[in-house]
Amino acid sequence: MTEANIALITGASGGIGMELARIHASGGNDLVIVARSQAKLEALKAELEAAHQVKVWVIVADLSEADAAQKIYTQTEELGIKIKILINNAGFGGHGLFHQRTLAKEQAMMQVNMVTLTNLTHYYLQDMVAANYGRILNVSSSASFVPGPLQAVYFATKAYVTSFSQAIAEEVKAHNISVTTLCPGTVATDFVITGDLQGVATWKYAKSAQSVAATGYRDMSKGLLVSFNERVIKLMINWVIPLLPRKWLLKMSRAAMEKRD
Image (cartoon, rainbow, N blue to C red):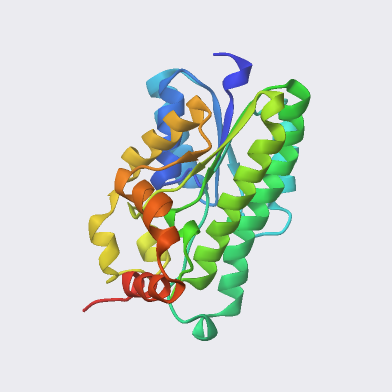
C-alpha cells in the first residue's frame, strides 16, 4: 500500500460507490468511505478489511447539508489522511414535472449532485496540486449530454458535472492530475426507487453497478477524460445527438423518461 493510493469515495453504501470501493480495496489500497448510513458503511468496512487486509475509514455525512464537504475534509485532515484519489459518486434524481415537484427536493439534489461535489473537489484538488499527483473520478451520466424533460433538474446537474470535470481536467493536467467523468447509461441500483423511476422503460436495459464501476475505475486509472460503459451510448452522444434537431431531441428525451403501465 502506498500513500498515493488512498481514495475517498462518496455514496459508498450501495450501488456504483460500493462496487468502486470493492475494486479499489481489491488492489490492496486503503480508502475512506462516505455516506449517510453508518450501518451500511460499517458492514462494508468489515467486508473489505477482512477480504483484502486494507484500512478503511468511515465518515458518516449527509451530502445535502451545505457544510458537508468542509466537515469531510476536516475529518480526513485530523486523521492525517492524504487523499490522492477522489471519487465523487454520490447523487440522486427525481421524476416528474418540474413545477409539480417539491422545491426542497430539487434543492437537495442540486446540493448533492453539484455543490458538494464541487466543494470536495476544491478542497482535495489543492492538496493534489501541491503534491503534483492526483486522480479524480466524477460520476456523471449519459443524461448530461441532453436536456431531460421529467427529470429536468437531474439532467441539468449532470450536465454541470460533465462540463465542470472536463474544464478542471484541462486546468490541472500539468500537475500530473487527471479528472475522469464517468457517463453511464441506466444502472441497476436503488437510484430507480429513490428517484421514483419505477415504470420508466429505459431501466429495463440497465447495466449492473459492478460493470459500470469496473469501467469507470479502469478509465480513471488510465487518466481518460470521459468514460462510457456502452459503445452505443458513446456513438450516439458523439455522432448522432449533435446532428438532431433540438425539438426532436426533446421529444425523444421525454419519451425515454415516460412511465409505462
